[in-house]
Image (cartoon, rainbow, N blue to C red; front, side):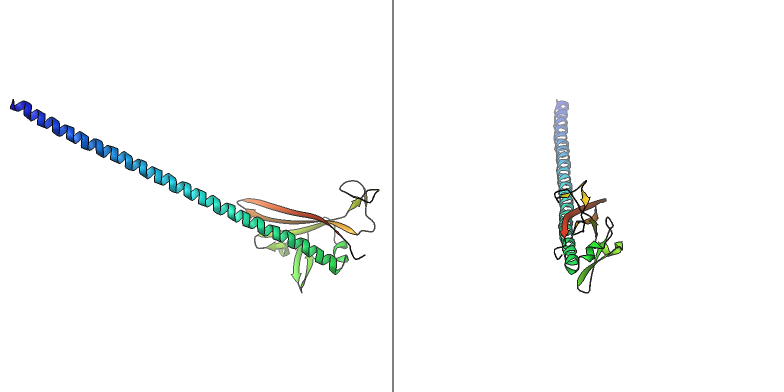
Length: 178
């Protein structure tokens, strides 16, 4: 009889140890799950923050490029207002860059003059063709004579995330003083 009581006591001890190990095993699994959830949450937050910074920077650069495009258009107007020959004497389809000195704008063919921070700004001029009704046409027609208008293309480009982004503003300018 004593033998069966001993075995019984030993069995209870084994069951108690099993319960302790099971509880510890569950606790280890719970800790592992909690750490995994926290790690995934932190990585997700970091990814969202990184993407937000990238999008904010890209938006900031796009806004800056819009200002540079508008400034380029204003520079062309200043050149025209100073003298139409500032524009009519330029070679068509050639890249020009703006320089601001002596209180006014001028053009240059030196690419370094077109660098503004991370941006490169250039301007090209094209002659205008007109149809029989004197309307501007993009193809066909005849070269306007005398030349009193130009097609202006201001372009701003910059590197962003391994790619080059380009924004363009195109407009016609006329010799309003002739």
